[in-house]
Image (cartoon, rainbow, N blue to C red; front, side, top):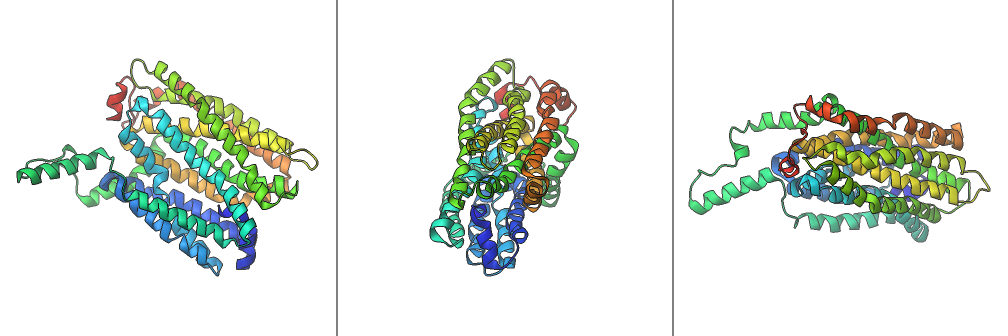
Length: 428
């Protein structure tokens, strides 16, 4: 939402555009730092307490941005808010793994992935019009503050889903009912001390990222996709505001093209589910999640080529808008496939595996506001877009490699899920 009118914020705080871009950079960087704590913590104390703590502090630390009179207050508030708001980015994947068996997990994961990208695309749309109609950029943050407060209330009434915690609670309830202490959760038998558990849990995301090729390369691919999304937050204003003269409200409307692509991607998800069911007749195979990713890696660079070479003065807006639809479609099917593949491949460490991916993705995405505008201005819009498209072509084979050889990679791993187990056994 703040990207809807960053120039007005910079003017009010008397700073350069590069300085105000840091408010986006630090917020996104918080997405990468927070899960390193929240993901393993959710595997120790449960999902619900982490959600409650996370969203409550996001709510509280959005307030400094509403009231900021200087850039220091703005940046500090945004950094803490980014860290606080990061828990759902990773823990929802773990929650989905808690609730659904692996063969039923595709659609819930798709809906969750859709919200991760639909929100950022709706943000500039709402932010631009709020600033345009109120003539005060602060109202962007006030609306966000109110929304966070409402969401925070819902986290307190949601149920716990993590099996370890549920078994622990059941054992405690049985002990109380029978006035005994004989009931013990199997996860608490020979449980290591808290200090050792913390050490293992906090280091696990880094170990997975370094030692597991699936997480490393899928995280790299998703980092590129995520960076492209943030790149478009700055490239769309250039294409529509600078080149075509649209106002900030209409620039926000241009993001509807990406939303349409996301909606189109959701329409094809049942095809992925049918392909997955056919592939896994004899047991769960995580690579069966990669069918749509292999399609998306073709459409992604195509969308960037279209966007780059239809953004000239005098050319109708339909070209960049069509590129937005193609980008939204490819982005979502790539993300859903890769995210589901990671969760299925590391079901026992789902939250930590997703935290490792989110850390790399967020660090890459956080850097984008600091160089993307300069890249498009100095290289020229067309050559900048061409460069990004060529990178997409070069890394495109990654899903194909894992589709054919991912099983062998997992067989060598001591942490990954193996082929052949019944799907429901893998989930539970």
